[in-house]
Length: 223
Image 1 (cartoon, rainbow, N blue to C red):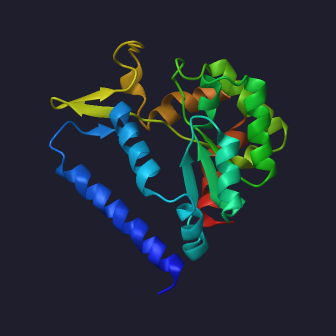
Image 2 (cartoon, rainbow, N blue to C red):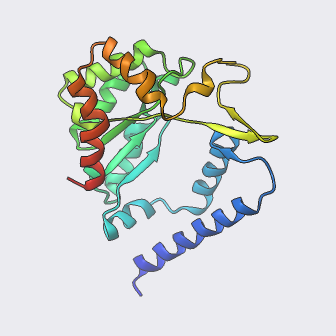
Protein backbone atom coordinates (compact mmCIF):
# COMPACT_ATOMS: atom_id res chain seq x y z
CA UNK A 1 0.00 0.00 0.00
CA UNK A 2 1.38 3.40 -0.96
CA UNK A 3 2.18 6.06 1.62
CA UNK A 4 -0.52 8.33 0.17
CA UNK A 5 -3.22 5.66 0.49
CA UNK A 6 -2.15 4.88 4.06
CA UNK A 7 -2.50 8.58 4.90
CA UNK A 8 -5.99 8.73 3.33
CA UNK A 9 -7.06 5.68 5.37
CA UNK A 10 -5.66 7.25 8.53
CA UNK A 11 -7.60 10.47 7.92
CA UNK A 12 -10.75 8.43 7.26
CA UNK A 13 -10.37 6.57 10.57
CA UNK A 14 -9.95 9.87 12.42
CA UNK A 15 -13.10 11.23 10.83
CA UNK A 16 -15.11 8.10 11.73
CA UNK A 17 -13.84 8.25 15.29
CA UNK A 18 -14.94 11.88 15.49
CA UNK A 19 -18.45 10.93 14.31
CA UNK A 20 -18.62 8.16 16.90
CA UNK A 21 -17.72 10.62 19.65
CA UNK A 22 -20.44 13.01 18.52
CA UNK A 23 -23.05 10.24 18.59
CA UNK A 24 -22.01 9.23 22.11
CA UNK A 25 -22.23 12.71 23.63
CA UNK A 26 -25.49 12.88 25.68
CA UNK A 27 -25.81 16.65 25.52
CA UNK A 28 -27.55 19.29 23.45
CA UNK A 29 -27.06 18.94 19.71
CA UNK A 30 -25.41 21.85 17.94
CA UNK A 31 -25.64 22.41 14.19
CA UNK A 32 -23.64 24.52 14.00
CA UNK A 33 -23.83 27.21 16.63
CA UNK A 34 -20.85 28.33 18.71
CA UNK A 35 -20.14 24.90 20.21
CA UNK A 36 -20.44 23.16 16.85
CA UNK A 37 -17.87 25.46 15.29
CA UNK A 38 -15.49 24.96 18.22
CA UNK A 39 -15.68 21.16 17.90
CA UNK A 40 -14.83 21.31 14.19
CA UNK A 41 -11.90 23.66 14.83
CA UNK A 42 -10.45 21.36 17.49
CA UNK A 43 -10.71 18.28 15.25
CA UNK A 44 -9.22 20.10 12.27
CA UNK A 45 -6.32 21.60 14.23
CA UNK A 46 -5.29 18.41 16.03
CA UNK A 47 -6.19 15.52 13.75
CA UNK A 48 -6.28 16.65 10.10
CA UNK A 49 -2.99 16.91 8.26
CA UNK A 50 -2.62 20.06 6.12
CA UNK A 51 -2.17 18.16 2.85
CA UNK A 52 -5.15 15.82 3.28
CA UNK A 53 -7.78 17.68 1.26
CA UNK A 54 -5.51 18.23 -1.74
CA UNK A 55 -4.28 14.62 -1.63
CA UNK A 56 -7.79 13.18 -1.56
CA UNK A 57 -8.77 15.40 -4.47
CA UNK A 58 -5.84 14.05 -6.47
CA UNK A 59 -7.11 10.52 -5.84
CA UNK A 60 -10.81 10.92 -6.62
CA UNK A 61 -11.32 14.42 -8.06
CA UNK A 62 -13.64 15.48 -5.23
CA UNK A 63 -14.43 19.19 -4.91
CA UNK A 64 -13.09 21.02 -1.87
CA UNK A 65 -15.03 23.53 0.24
CA UNK A 66 -13.39 25.41 3.10
CA UNK A 67 -14.84 27.20 6.12
CA UNK A 68 -13.55 30.73 5.74
CA UNK A 69 -14.70 33.67 7.87
CA UNK A 70 -11.48 35.47 6.90
CA UNK A 71 -8.25 34.77 5.07
CA UNK A 72 -9.86 33.55 1.85
CA UNK A 73 -6.76 34.12 -0.27
CA UNK A 74 -4.50 32.42 2.26
CA UNK A 75 -6.66 29.30 2.27
CA UNK A 76 -6.88 29.22 -1.50
CA UNK A 77 -3.12 29.63 -1.90
CA UNK A 78 -2.40 26.87 0.58
CA UNK A 79 -4.67 24.37 -1.17
CA UNK A 80 -3.29 25.14 -4.63
CA UNK A 81 0.30 24.95 -3.38
CA UNK A 82 -0.49 21.46 -2.08
CA UNK A 83 -1.80 20.31 -5.44
CA UNK A 84 -5.53 21.11 -5.43
CA UNK A 85 -7.19 22.06 -8.72
CA UNK A 86 -8.40 25.71 -8.61
CA UNK A 87 -11.72 25.10 -10.40
CA UNK A 88 -12.51 22.37 -7.85
CA UNK A 89 -12.09 24.65 -4.82
CA UNK A 90 -14.56 27.05 -3.26
CA UNK A 91 -13.98 29.22 -0.22
CA UNK A 92 -17.13 29.61 1.87
CA UNK A 93 -18.32 32.47 4.10
CA UNK A 94 -16.21 34.90 2.05
CA UNK A 95 -18.60 37.73 2.96
CA UNK A 96 -17.43 37.30 6.55
CA UNK A 97 -14.18 38.98 5.58
CA UNK A 98 -16.07 42.22 6.06
CA UNK A 99 -16.52 41.31 9.71
CA UNK A 100 -12.78 41.66 10.30
CA UNK A 101 -10.22 44.36 9.62
CA UNK A 102 -10.50 44.56 5.85
CA UNK A 103 -12.49 47.19 3.98
CA UNK A 104 -15.04 46.06 1.44
CA UNK A 105 -12.73 47.30 -1.32
CA UNK A 106 -9.92 45.10 0.00
CA UNK A 107 -12.23 42.09 0.28
CA UNK A 108 -13.48 42.67 -3.26
CA UNK A 109 -9.93 42.82 -4.61
CA UNK A 110 -8.99 39.63 -2.77
CA UNK A 111 -12.01 37.70 -4.05
CA UNK A 112 -11.54 38.86 -7.62
CA UNK A 113 -7.94 37.63 -7.46
CA UNK A 114 -9.21 34.16 -6.45
CA UNK A 115 -11.68 34.18 -9.33
CA UNK A 116 -8.92 35.18 -11.76
CA UNK A 117 -6.94 32.15 -10.63
CA UNK A 118 -9.91 29.85 -11.29
CA UNK A 119 -11.40 29.43 -7.79
CA UNK A 120 -14.98 29.78 -6.62
CA UNK A 121 -16.39 31.75 -3.68
CA UNK A 122 -19.57 31.24 -1.65
CA UNK A 123 -21.69 33.95 0.00
CA UNK A 124 -24.28 33.03 2.63
CA UNK A 125 -24.93 35.77 5.21
CA UNK A 126 -28.24 36.84 3.71
CA UNK A 127 -30.40 38.63 6.26
CA UNK A 128 -27.67 38.75 8.89
CA UNK A 129 -27.01 42.46 9.16
CA UNK A 130 -24.96 41.99 12.33
CA UNK A 131 -22.48 39.99 10.23
CA UNK A 132 -22.53 41.69 6.84
CA UNK A 133 -24.73 44.70 5.99
CA UNK A 134 -26.75 44.29 2.80
CA UNK A 135 -25.19 47.35 1.15
CA UNK A 136 -21.75 45.77 1.56
CA UNK A 137 -22.91 42.46 0.12
CA UNK A 138 -24.32 44.25 -2.92
CA UNK A 139 -21.02 46.11 -3.33
CA UNK A 140 -19.06 42.83 -3.35
CA UNK A 141 -21.38 41.03 -5.74
CA UNK A 142 -21.58 43.93 -8.16
CA UNK A 143 -17.80 44.43 -8.08
CA UNK A 144 -17.19 40.76 -8.88
CA UNK A 145 -19.83 40.66 -11.61
CA UNK A 146 -18.59 43.86 -13.21
CA UNK A 147 -15.07 42.41 -13.22
CA UNK A 148 -16.41 39.53 -15.32
CA UNK A 149 -16.51 36.79 -12.69
CA UNK A 150 -20.20 36.17 -12.03
CA UNK A 151 -19.39 32.61 -13.14
CA UNK A 152 -17.30 32.12 -9.97
CA UNK A 153 -19.96 33.07 -7.41
CA UNK A 154 -22.08 30.66 -5.36
CA UNK A 155 -24.84 31.78 -2.98
CA UNK A 156 -26.53 29.85 -0.19
CA UNK A 157 -27.90 30.21 3.35
CA UNK A 158 -25.81 29.95 6.50
CA UNK A 159 -28.45 28.20 8.65
CA UNK A 160 -27.19 27.90 12.21
CA UNK A 161 -29.13 26.52 15.17
CA UNK A 162 -28.89 24.23 18.15
CA UNK A 163 -31.33 22.07 20.09
CA UNK A 164 -31.89 23.08 23.69
CA UNK A 165 -34.49 21.39 25.91
CA UNK A 166 -36.28 20.08 22.83
CA UNK A 167 -36.43 23.50 21.18
CA UNK A 168 -34.56 24.67 18.07
CA UNK A 169 -32.66 27.88 18.89
CA UNK A 170 -31.44 29.87 15.88
CA UNK A 171 -28.16 31.76 15.94
CA UNK A 172 -28.79 35.46 16.40
CA UNK A 173 -32.14 34.96 18.10
CA UNK A 174 -30.71 35.41 21.58
CA UNK A 175 -28.59 38.22 22.99
CA UNK A 176 -26.61 40.22 22.05
CA UNK A 177 -28.27 40.34 18.61
CA UNK A 178 -31.81 39.30 19.63
CA UNK A 179 -32.83 39.24 15.96
CA UNK A 180 -36.59 38.56 15.70
CA UNK A 181 -36.12 37.28 12.13
CA UNK A 182 -33.44 34.72 12.99
CA UNK A 183 -35.84 31.76 12.83
CA UNK A 184 -36.88 32.74 9.29
CA UNK A 185 -33.41 32.16 7.89
CA UNK A 186 -33.94 28.58 6.77
CA UNK A 187 -32.92 27.37 3.32
CA UNK A 188 -36.31 28.52 2.01
CA UNK A 189 -35.27 32.08 2.88
CA UNK A 190 -33.12 32.13 -0.24
CA UNK A 191 -36.17 31.98 -2.51
CA UNK A 192 -38.71 33.83 -0.35
CA UNK A 193 -36.52 36.78 0.66
CA UNK A 194 -32.99 36.81 -0.73
CA UNK A 195 -33.77 36.41 -4.43
CA UNK A 196 -36.49 39.13 -4.44
CA UNK A 197 -34.07 41.42 -2.62
CA UNK A 198 -31.35 40.70 -5.18
CA UNK A 199 -33.74 41.66 -7.97
CA UNK A 200 -34.62 44.91 -6.20
CA UNK A 201 -30.91 45.65 -5.84
CA UNK A 202 -30.40 45.53 -9.60
CA UNK A 203 -29.27 41.97 -10.25
CA UNK A 204 -30.82 40.34 -13.30
CA UNK A 205 -32.66 37.04 -13.50
CA UNK A 206 -29.80 35.78 -15.65
CA UNK A 207 -27.21 36.67 -13.01
CA UNK A 208 -29.24 35.03 -10.24
CA UNK A 209 -29.69 31.89 -12.37
CA UNK A 210 -25.93 31.86 -12.84
CA UNK A 211 -25.34 32.01 -9.07
CA UNK A 212 -27.94 29.39 -8.13
CA UNK A 213 -27.96 26.97 -11.07
CA UNK A 214 -25.14 27.30 -13.59
CA UNK A 215 -22.25 27.77 -11.18
CA UNK A 216 -23.12 24.92 -8.76
CA UNK A 217 -23.62 22.55 -11.71
CA UNK A 218 -20.28 23.50 -13.25
CA UNK A 219 -18.45 23.32 -9.94
CA UNK A 220 -19.78 19.99 -8.68
CA UNK A 221 -19.63 18.35 -12.12
CA UNK A 222 -16.07 19.50 -12.62
CA UNK A 223 -16.80 21.28 -15.90
